[in-house]
Length: 304
Image (cartoon, rainbow, N blue to C red; front, side, top):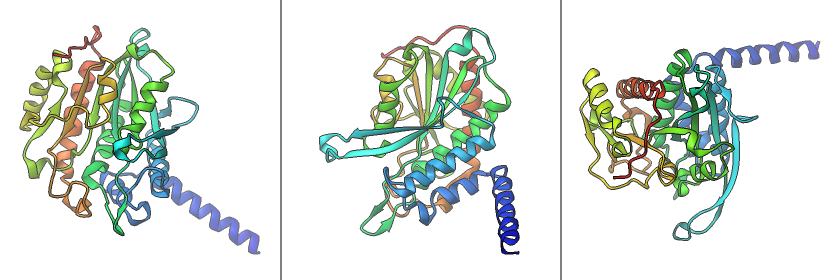
């Protein structure tokens, strides 16, 4: 009788988990990624691993396949000396949406965001809602739309680990890529995009790296009635697009301001996130990425 009861209990739990896989919403994702068990998602911690597992389950729910044999790409890298020189172990989460064109599908568009944050400091959890659970949610939104409307080029959906430790996950991916980097057409990075209503502006960086970027940004910002500006801050090396930029790959980086009042603070909370703004940015991103991903010509890198 006990065995029967345990079996029934297991079946109920399993069915609940299976159902949960199909009901992820941006608000649910934000709530989980900023929750206490994840302890601020510091690279190399249990919370970091829980975030990776959760993102993998999101990709599975969207029927997005792993690019390699597994969704997870483990790495151990050394932080820069100025950051302490410690060895950091984490994992990138990588999905893949195959392109529809027999020739162009051999090229790649990368959409990415980092999922880690700074963890616990002085015993206080830093939830990292805007930095960068907002980017994770945006990439999941865009990935869902691309999965439903595949591009001619293939799309790599990447959630980088250990960005806060010095872009370790993205540097590792670039260094260990199992395909020619020249087949990457463009990289679109979303980092801190959860404050559109508060800041009033969508900012970009890297628009000079491909001539078409400025035109497309103006076009789709106007379509969705979103105020858009080139970021006034000089932080080209401040997020995971930078290792690709160094390899002369066109990159476009989105955010909604640097959010200094909450940046790396316990006050970076989910209740401060503008979900409608994330939806708008997701739509702009999808339209822009679709146009680039379906172009016949490959983008040419322009450093300016």
